[in-house]
Length: 237
Image 1 (tube, rainbow, N blue to C red):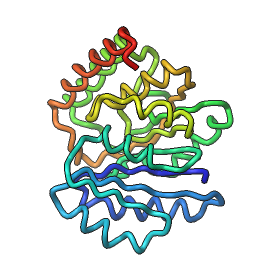
Image 2 (cartoon, rainbow, N blue to C red):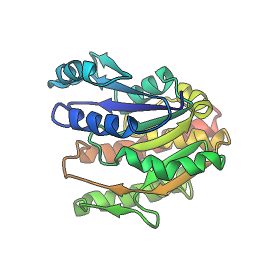
Image 3 (cartoon, helix red, strand yellow):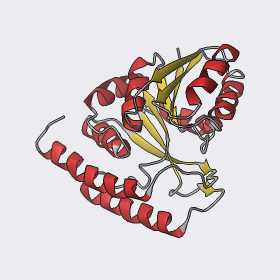
Image 4 (cartoon, rainbow, N blue to C red):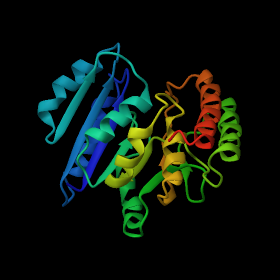
């Protein structure tokens, strides 16, 4: 199987169905084989019911319904290790980065990149709706912090659209220790530690202003970056 698409979902009753239909419509036009894995992260709304209703309408889809919320990192790991594809993409449930961006990613897989990540900070990226000032400021300051401690040269670690080769996914995700927002940083830090080539690709990002990331999550990531740095120093991984 060429591609697995992992979609972590949390309280996504209003957005998950159109996202899945968009993904299905794109993949059904491709010549390669694929699968979709949706991991419900203990949603407290009607997400589970929506997924149950749509399951029979989309081929090659698997629903993992967790009753307890574990965090985005935990369920992305769960999906990545459950997946069967030679390449494994995780994308956000709000479809802020549409799956047709894969067209930009595939050439780099031929070029030897095992980890290809979406970015709104490299040249060529476009943002349809600018975030609030404080979010942009926190994001820029946070990236400088991440680059200083862990990932110099990576300008956007937090975009929810990342593609991994199967060998990279199998090497990286079993080692994850962070279950929530800082997991993106840990994933990329491990990719670099294990010698996988990372490529940052500009994308079109459509932000509808419905982010469920609370301001406190930014500070949580900053703390988790220090944890990652410590784990690297003491060779915990």
